[in-house]
Length: 432
Image (cartoon, rainbow, N blue to C red; front, side, top):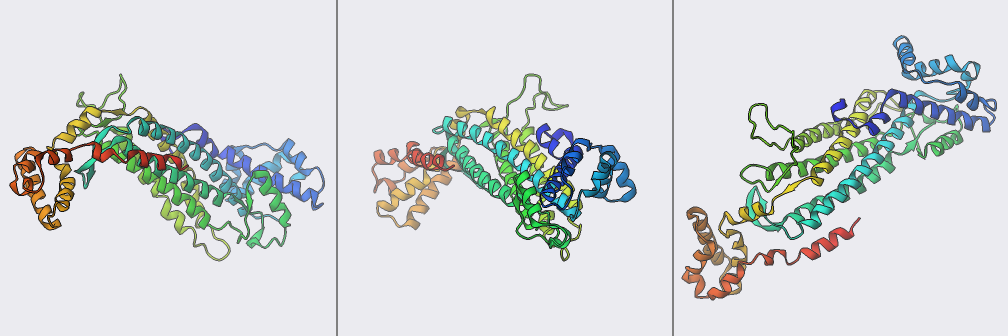
C-alpha cells in the first residue's frame, strides 16, 4: 500500500525487516524445542540469537541468485552465525516459516483493526446520543418517507460496527494458528512438540492438521471479514456524501481554515474524505475473491496463493486501518445541521404523515383500499400544488364526515414518530 494511505504502526508489521525478524523468531523457537528433545546440541538457539543479524539487502542479493526467499534468509543468517547455523530449520519446510509468519502478521494487524473499531464505536455512540431526538426525514429509494432522528441513523451504524467487531474477533481467532509439520504435513522429520512450543512462543494455536500449508479457508474468512467491514465503511460514507449535497446539506465534513475544495471553483467544499473511503472500500473488497480462490490449492501444496497473499495481506489490512481511522475522524468532527433537517422535513408540506392518516381512516371504518385512495389523492395534490397536506385533508368532506378536524390535526405530530426511541436506544446500547 502506498504511503498516502498507510499508518506507521500497521505498516511496520508488513515491512521486510519485521517479516524476517518473525522468521528468525520462529526458527529460534523451533531450535529451543529441539534442544529440549536433544535433537540438536544444547545452546544452539542462544548462540544463533546472539550472532544473527537481519540484513534485508543481503537477503535480497542472495535471493536474486537462488530464487528462494527462505533459503536466502537462512543463508544470510548462517553467514553471521557460523557452524551453529546448520541446526536451523531441521526437519522443517519453507511453508512452516511462511505460513506461521503470515498468520502472525494477520493476527497483529487484526488487533490494530479491532482497536480502530473500538475508537470508532466511541465516536458513533457519542453522536447517536447527542442527536437522539434531532428530527430529520427518513428516506427510502432516496425519497422522503417518514420522520426519524439523526441519532437513530447513527445508532444503525453503531450496531453494524458492533457486529463487525465480533466478526473480526472471530476471524482473528480463526487465523491465529501455527504449523511446523514439515513436508506434506506428516511430522516425518520433526516432532509435533516443536510445533506446540513455537505456537506457545508466538501466542498462536496449533493447526490441527496442515497439508504442508495452513488451510486457506481460514484466510478466506479473515479477508471476507475485512471486505464486510469495508462495505460498512462505504455505507456510512455514502450516507454522509448524500446528506452533504448542496440541496440537502444536513451534515457536512469538517473543512479546515486553510483547506481548498477546488482548483477552479473557490466556493467548493466537497465530501472528499467520504469519497476517498468509498474508493478504499472497493480496493479492500477486491482482495476477497482472490482469498476465496486461494482455498483450492493442488494436493498438499502449491504456491498459487503466494503472490496473492504477498499483496493482499499488507494492502487490505493497511488500507482498512487507514479507512477506519479516517472515518473516525470524520464522525468526531462532523458538522450536523438540525435546522436544515427541520427545513427539509417541511418541504413536502407534511405528506409524510400519510400513513398515520391512512391508519386512522381504516380505524374509522374505511376499507384499506378506500382509505389509501383518499390519502394518496390529497398527498399528491399537496406535492403537485405545493399545498398543505393537512389543509387538503381537512377540506375533504369524505374524511371529515368520519373524523373530526381536531382529531385530524392531532395526527400531524412529530412525537408520534419518536415515542419508541428510548426502547431502540436501550436495547441497542446494551449489546456489546
